[in-house]
Length: 291
Ligand SMILES: [Zn+2]
Image 1 (cartoon, protein in one colour):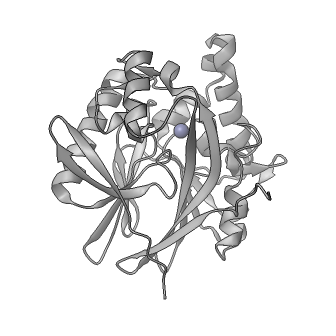
Image 2 (spheres, protein in one colour):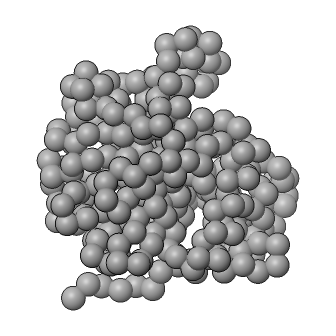
């Protein structure tokens, strides 16, 4: 038994843009303990309907968009901040035919360790030519020494991880926060979806009438939170607006019929939504190799 799998990438065209899903790996999460506004027994029951159980192998995905003039990476994976099963995004990116030096811009959906840890490798920028952008509300929250000082012991790591990962870019003048919903490059727009963190942002990618919205951590557990959108997770900074943004995004995606992608949906984490009853059905993308 070889017991290894190749670094993962999945590629498709979206109008004139090339979109590559990059796997950072998976991490086993005790989702029956982490999900809130439900009970562990109800989570176990719901998972069982999808032949799953807790702890659940949970994907961590980043997305690389080549617009033809800019190479943009949305989220960077965990780097060294989340243990040995994650931190594979750089290998996935190289396997997909690109080099980290080619990345022009990095957009962070938010500043949790599994989304920004890949910014640095051994304390140096992993993407030496990239400008990093994130909502200023997340920068103000996670890069604040005062917030680190007053955080409980078990929460300090997230602040320290954000500071260490962004520091080389800040020092080089390559961290440029944005303020709310705004177009970042032609065809890619930041859309505020605050709640999971103070500045949590989704990115709408559009080319030639085709649309993909990169959801970040708008939701975490596909087998539970499509059927039960009201279920929240302990990682939310403020779970009420997080749940409201999720419901709004689900309804819009189902109505618009456009593609969505989630940082923690099973790799490649891309698909469509169909509404059904009080919830939604997730329809993963068909496998379509480029020719
Ligand atoms: Zn996350």
